[in-house]
Amino acid sequence: MHFGSLVAALGSFLWSRGAGGRWLVRMEDLDTPRTVPGAAEEILRALEIHALQWDEPVWWQSRRTEAYAEALAGLRKGGWVYACGCSRRQIAALGLRGEFGFRYPGSCRNRALPWSARRAIRLSSNGPITSFEDAVRGPQSQRVAEAVGDFVLRRADGLHAYQLAVVVDDAAQGVDMVVRGADLLGSTPRQILLQRRLGLPTPGYAHLPLALTKAGVKLSKQSHAAPLNLRQPGTNLTAALRFLGQRPPSELATESPATVLDWALAHWSPSAVPGADLTIDDSPDPGQRDLRPDSTIA
Image 1: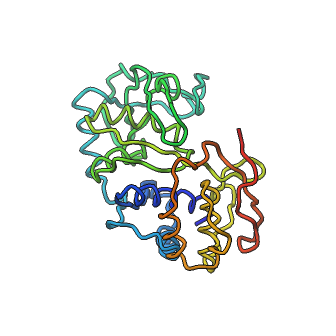
Image 2: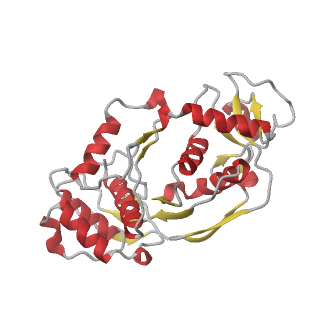
Image 3: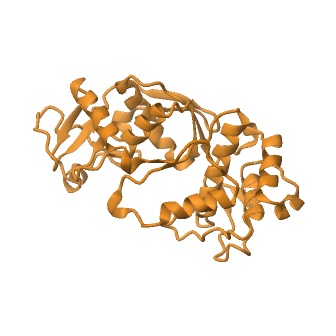
């Protein structure tokens, strides 16, 4: 677990517990070919070391494929989805740009291709602008058809897509507030559109600021983010609190994780969470680097 992951975990923990709710942990391990053995268990261990204890058993999306298949069948019955035979290369050749890369214009929407294990299944995205109020970032709106086009719910390799799984799981677990990193802000309109197609309730949303390197890149495995020093959980937690706009006293860094979280819950202020991403000192040694935000990225 790196610092950006801790920020998201801590922010969602405080938001839910501060409101008297449950804090739920879900392993989004649908992409089984890319799943690293033991990585999920390491994340859970890191959460426990930081005293971030979940309130219900962990859900593993790789074990819920039947629920996703059932939701997909319902969408098919309602005429909201269709089989697609287009490759990524063919989509790129169309040259249609959206907000997040190449946009799929629905080329196969009216072709009535038979469903098969080798064809992707897409949701028809035609419809009005999708708008919502983010608790951190404010009013948001997106016309999904223009931003991404008809998006995939089941891949051509048979694996269900994140967009479908997260919507089905949020409803099944009774989630009424989704707190996560701002890298998923652009996905939210798709999820709201899908909720409406499935007749499911739409929860509230709060997208937390991302931790960026000095080069402006999000901390992640892909950017080779250094792992947290698990021998200093109090230091990690107080740094994450400062990143989230809270003001813990400096001496709190030497206290136990439970003590830090007690202080955090007693002083939690959602309105202080920054509405923009922040850069941090991304020195390679997690035990030495300063994890405090040092500038705001507009």
